[in-house]
Length: 225
Image (tube, rainbow, N blue to C red; front, top):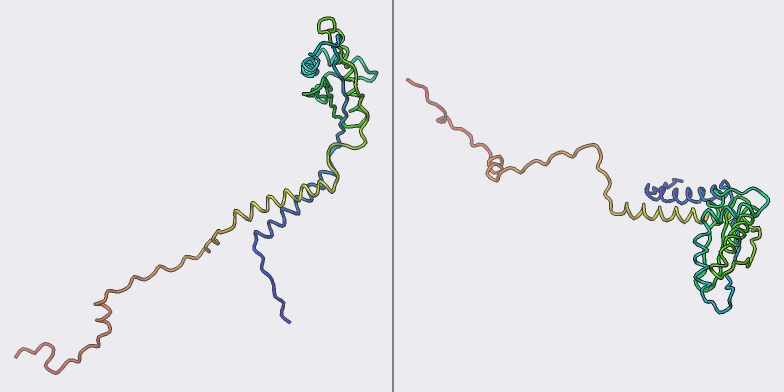
Protein backbone atom coordinates (compact mmCIF):
# COMPACT_ATOMS: atom_id res chain seq x y z
CA UNK A 1 0.00 0.00 0.00
CA UNK A 2 1.57 3.21 -1.14
CA UNK A 3 1.77 6.08 1.32
CA UNK A 4 0.89 9.55 0.11
CA UNK A 5 3.11 12.31 1.48
CA UNK A 6 1.41 15.68 1.78
CA UNK A 7 3.62 18.56 0.80
CA UNK A 8 2.80 21.56 2.95
CA UNK A 9 4.24 24.94 1.85
CA UNK A 10 6.98 26.34 4.01
CA UNK A 11 4.97 29.43 4.97
CA UNK A 12 2.37 27.27 6.74
CA UNK A 13 5.07 25.52 8.76
CA UNK A 14 6.51 28.93 9.68
CA UNK A 15 3.08 30.23 10.73
CA UNK A 16 2.43 27.21 12.97
CA UNK A 17 5.90 27.61 14.51
CA UNK A 18 5.20 31.28 15.35
CA UNK A 19 2.00 30.35 17.18
CA UNK A 20 3.77 27.61 19.14
CA UNK A 21 6.70 29.88 20.02
CA UNK A 22 4.33 32.61 21.19
CA UNK A 23 2.50 30.21 23.50
CA UNK A 24 5.78 28.89 24.94
CA UNK A 25 7.11 32.41 25.47
CA UNK A 26 3.94 33.48 27.31
CA UNK A 27 4.02 30.45 29.57
CA UNK A 28 7.72 30.93 30.31
CA UNK A 29 7.17 34.59 31.18
CA UNK A 30 4.40 33.71 33.63
CA UNK A 31 6.65 31.16 35.35
CA UNK A 32 9.95 33.05 35.42
CA UNK A 33 8.97 36.73 35.85
CA UNK A 34 9.15 38.25 39.32
CA UNK A 35 5.71 39.05 40.79
CA UNK A 36 4.61 42.62 41.47
CA UNK A 37 1.91 43.63 43.96
CA UNK A 38 -0.14 46.83 43.92
CA UNK A 39 -1.81 48.43 46.94
CA UNK A 40 -3.95 51.59 47.09
CA UNK A 41 -4.79 54.04 49.82
CA UNK A 42 -7.09 57.09 49.72
CA UNK A 43 -7.07 60.48 51.43
CA UNK A 44 -9.66 63.24 51.21
CA UNK A 45 -9.44 67.01 51.33
CA UNK A 46 -11.86 68.66 53.73
CA UNK A 47 -12.48 72.40 54.04
CA UNK A 48 -12.16 73.91 57.50
CA UNK A 49 -15.17 76.12 56.78
CA UNK A 50 -18.14 74.18 55.46
CA UNK A 51 -18.95 76.91 52.94
CA UNK A 52 -15.61 76.67 51.07
CA UNK A 53 -15.91 74.98 47.66
CA UNK A 54 -12.24 74.69 46.71
CA UNK A 55 -11.61 71.21 48.07
CA UNK A 56 -11.52 69.59 44.62
CA UNK A 57 -8.97 72.11 43.39
CA UNK A 58 -6.74 71.53 46.40
CA UNK A 59 -7.04 67.77 45.92
CA UNK A 60 -5.61 68.17 42.41
CA UNK A 61 -2.81 70.35 43.78
CA UNK A 62 -1.90 67.92 46.55
CA UNK A 63 -1.90 65.01 44.10
CA UNK A 64 0.67 66.88 42.01
CA UNK A 65 2.99 67.61 44.93
CA UNK A 66 2.77 64.06 46.31
CA UNK A 67 5.91 63.16 44.37
CA UNK A 68 7.88 66.13 45.65
CA UNK A 69 10.66 66.00 48.22
CA UNK A 70 8.71 67.48 51.15
CA UNK A 71 5.98 64.84 51.03
CA UNK A 72 8.45 62.01 50.44
CA UNK A 73 10.70 63.15 53.29
CA UNK A 74 7.71 63.30 55.62
CA UNK A 75 6.60 59.84 54.47
CA UNK A 76 9.95 58.27 55.38
CA UNK A 77 9.49 59.41 58.99
CA UNK A 78 5.98 58.03 59.48
CA UNK A 79 6.85 54.31 59.53
CA UNK A 80 9.16 52.27 61.68
CA UNK A 81 10.79 50.28 58.86
CA UNK A 82 13.31 52.14 56.72
CA UNK A 83 11.96 53.66 53.50
CA UNK A 84 14.10 55.69 51.13
CA UNK A 85 12.98 58.67 49.09
CA UNK A 86 14.18 56.94 45.93
CA UNK A 87 11.98 53.92 46.62
CA UNK A 88 8.95 56.15 47.13
CA UNK A 89 9.66 58.06 43.94
CA UNK A 90 9.92 54.85 41.91
CA UNK A 91 7.08 52.85 43.45
CA UNK A 92 4.34 55.33 44.44
CA UNK A 93 1.98 57.40 42.27
CA UNK A 94 -0.84 59.79 43.26
CA UNK A 95 -3.88 60.88 41.26
CA UNK A 96 -6.98 62.92 42.03
CA UNK A 97 -10.55 62.20 41.02
CA UNK A 98 -12.30 64.82 38.86
CA UNK A 99 -15.65 64.79 40.70
CA UNK A 100 -14.60 64.45 44.35
CA UNK A 101 -11.84 65.82 46.62
CA UNK A 102 -10.23 62.38 46.91
CA UNK A 103 -6.61 61.47 46.20
CA UNK A 104 -5.73 57.89 45.20
CA UNK A 105 -2.24 56.72 46.12
CA UNK A 106 -0.96 53.60 44.34
CA UNK A 107 2.18 51.71 45.34
CA UNK A 108 3.84 48.76 43.56
CA UNK A 109 6.37 46.48 45.26
CA UNK A 110 7.77 42.93 45.03
CA UNK A 111 5.75 41.85 48.08
CA UNK A 112 2.18 42.55 49.11
CA UNK A 113 3.16 43.83 52.57
CA UNK A 114 5.69 46.25 51.15
CA UNK A 115 3.22 47.66 48.66
CA UNK A 116 0.69 48.40 51.41
CA UNK A 117 3.40 49.90 53.60
CA UNK A 118 4.56 52.29 50.87
CA UNK A 119 1.03 53.45 50.04
CA UNK A 120 0.18 54.14 53.70
CA UNK A 121 3.50 55.94 54.24
CA UNK A 122 2.84 58.28 51.32
CA UNK A 123 -0.67 58.97 52.61
CA UNK A 124 0.71 59.84 56.03
CA UNK A 125 3.37 62.10 54.52
CA UNK A 126 0.75 63.93 52.48
CA UNK A 127 -1.38 64.46 55.61
CA UNK A 128 1.61 65.90 57.48
CA UNK A 129 2.50 68.38 54.71
CA UNK A 130 -1.12 69.46 54.19
CA UNK A 131 -1.61 70.01 57.90
CA UNK A 132 1.34 72.44 57.97
CA UNK A 133 -0.38 74.53 55.29
CA UNK A 134 -3.86 74.48 56.83
CA UNK A 135 -3.65 78.04 58.28
CA UNK A 136 -3.09 79.41 54.77
CA UNK A 137 -5.24 77.04 52.71
CA UNK A 138 -8.11 76.48 55.16
CA UNK A 139 -8.03 72.83 54.02
CA UNK A 140 -7.13 69.64 55.80
CA UNK A 141 -6.21 66.21 54.45
CA UNK A 142 -7.45 63.18 56.33
CA UNK A 143 -7.08 59.45 55.62
CA UNK A 144 -10.11 57.95 53.91
CA UNK A 145 -9.00 54.35 53.38
CA UNK A 146 -5.77 52.60 54.36
CA UNK A 147 -4.02 50.17 52.03
CA UNK A 148 -4.14 46.48 52.80
CA UNK A 149 -1.79 43.81 51.40
CA UNK A 150 -3.24 42.44 48.15
CA UNK A 151 -3.92 38.74 47.85
CA UNK A 152 -2.82 38.37 44.22
CA UNK A 153 -0.02 39.91 42.20
CA UNK A 154 -0.88 42.35 39.45
CA UNK A 155 1.85 40.94 37.19
CA UNK A 156 2.71 38.62 35.66
CA UNK A 157 -0.67 37.09 34.71
CA UNK A 158 -1.56 33.47 35.37
CA UNK A 159 0.14 30.84 33.17
CA UNK A 160 -3.10 30.17 31.29
CA UNK A 161 -3.66 33.85 30.51
CA UNK A 162 -0.01 34.41 29.59
CA UNK A 163 -0.05 31.38 27.28
CA UNK A 164 -3.19 32.65 25.56
CA UNK A 165 -1.67 36.11 25.11
CA UNK A 166 1.54 34.64 23.67
CA UNK A 167 -0.41 32.39 21.29
CA UNK A 168 -2.51 35.37 20.16
CA UNK A 169 0.66 37.33 19.42
CA UNK A 170 1.96 34.33 17.43
CA UNK A 171 -1.30 34.19 15.44
CA UNK A 172 -0.92 37.89 14.62
CA UNK A 173 2.65 37.42 13.40
CA UNK A 174 1.65 34.32 11.45
CA UNK A 175 -1.12 36.26 9.73
CA UNK A 176 1.32 38.98 8.75
CA UNK A 177 3.69 36.33 7.37
CA UNK A 178 0.99 34.64 5.32
CA UNK A 179 -0.36 37.89 3.92
CA UNK A 180 3.12 39.04 2.94
CA UNK A 181 3.87 35.79 1.08
CA UNK A 182 0.58 35.46 -0.84
CA UNK A 183 1.00 36.06 -4.55
CA UNK A 184 4.76 35.74 -4.62
CA UNK A 185 6.21 33.75 -7.49
CA UNK A 186 8.70 31.01 -6.71
CA UNK A 187 12.29 31.94 -7.23
CA UNK A 188 13.83 30.69 -10.46
CA UNK A 189 16.36 27.89 -10.25
CA UNK A 190 20.04 28.41 -10.86
CA UNK A 191 19.87 27.02 -14.41
CA UNK A 192 19.21 29.46 -17.19
CA UNK A 193 16.73 28.64 -19.89
CA UNK A 194 18.22 28.42 -23.40
CA UNK A 195 17.85 31.52 -25.49
CA UNK A 196 15.13 31.26 -28.16
CA UNK A 197 16.31 30.75 -31.72
CA UNK A 198 15.17 33.56 -34.01
CA UNK A 199 12.99 32.38 -36.92
CA UNK A 200 14.53 32.16 -40.36
CA UNK A 201 13.36 34.47 -43.13
CA UNK A 202 10.67 33.14 -45.42
CA UNK A 203 12.86 33.07 -48.51
CA UNK A 204 15.49 30.98 -46.64
CA UNK A 205 12.89 28.38 -45.65
CA UNK A 206 11.67 28.09 -49.24
CA UNK A 207 15.21 27.72 -50.57
CA UNK A 208 16.01 24.97 -48.10
CA UNK A 209 12.86 23.04 -49.01
CA UNK A 210 13.50 23.22 -52.79
CA UNK A 211 15.37 20.11 -54.12
CA UNK A 212 18.57 20.70 -56.16
CA UNK A 213 18.13 20.39 -59.95
CA UNK A 214 20.22 17.62 -61.67
CA UNK A 215 22.98 18.74 -63.91
CA UNK A 216 23.05 17.56 -67.60
CA UNK A 217 26.05 16.57 -69.63
CA UNK A 218 26.20 20.05 -71.09
CA UNK A 219 26.28 21.71 -67.77
CA UNK A 220 29.52 22.83 -66.28
CA UNK A 221 32.53 24.42 -67.92
CA UNK A 222 33.48 23.24 -71.45
CA UNK A 223 37.07 22.21 -72.08
CA UNK A 224 39.07 24.50 -74.32
CA UNK A 225 40.28 22.95 -77.65
